Image 1 (tube, rainbow, N blue to C red):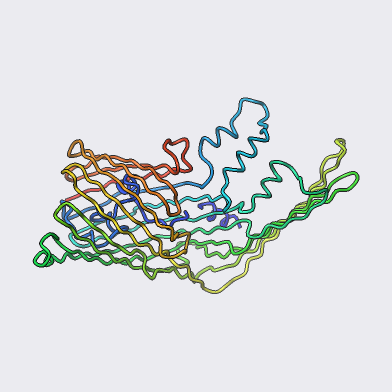
Image 2 (tube, rainbow, N blue to C red; image 1 turned 135 degrees about the horizontal axis):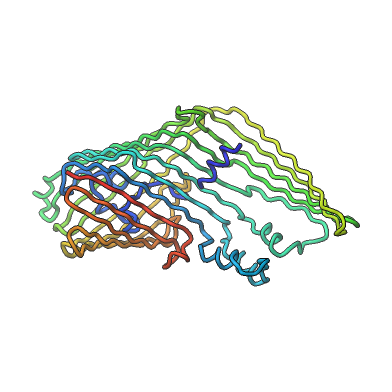
Length: 436
């Protein structure tokens, strides 16, 4: 059971796209400007576009995000840090804390994506990325928190049930991607203002080592008052569908496809349209199990202070072998544009549209914009923001060193905030590349 809880602890409402030290600095509005290895996760057609080199080797890259929809670092300081011996909340403090959790519950998310290998040569690009991702959602019914904060105001005796108290899923995998792009230069003969029309295709192969998903989770609470004591009974049941590798052999494999188009208008405008993870799914065939966990607790609370409370706890885990199952990979459309205002100043904008609801994908559109400014030829300064989707408001910035044969890029972003301590999460990325 412990390994299942560890997997669910790595809880992203978005399927990991693999933004890097460059893309995150633009607020992930990178489709129109992505080139070479970096284009694999945005538009395979961009692999073939001019990038100032014939060969790229991305030797290091990692991005990580940890975020939620309710709390920030300031929340922790305001509610849990105090100079008083006992941290007692006032009635207004309790109401303020409860109001931080939206009506659709508390959502905690994280994902980590690394880059084990990434290279591009002419029209081809190849990358291998380890991915750990998931989502966890709880407290959709906030009445249990209200009882914990304000005490029982219902009745002397009460009994309540909470269905689907916890929802979550998590996955660990390695994604191997191959992309190819081809530029149709003949379009310039018929449409002189367009420099080319590039078309690209890509295939992603997934090798998964772990997957877990809650199928059911129920909580039952009952309190009974007697003359000398009160009895509190708790019962929690969770049912999970899992596939976890015992050794080095994967438990699931799958694939998806990318399709992209790109063009340039009057040498200043770049446009990008891509569809990512078309027809994608992972089939889990090894170590597929259903885990049923039952926890029961009975607490006898005596009214007399001379007697200690009594607690009885029982726990049972049941594991059943099940057949193979399939998990769909979310499909996304990205539409982006960029404009070269000056040689060292480029503006960009993007529309991201989820096409399904699998693995936390959202059909709520996400729009954003970014800017690239180079005060010196080797120093990129990046900024951007995005709105909508599953992340809400994201404000990002980044920089780096971009030399002829080597580059180092880093960036970070904040969620629903203009200052880091008010952010409801942390986004950070770092990448390094050699170029020839």
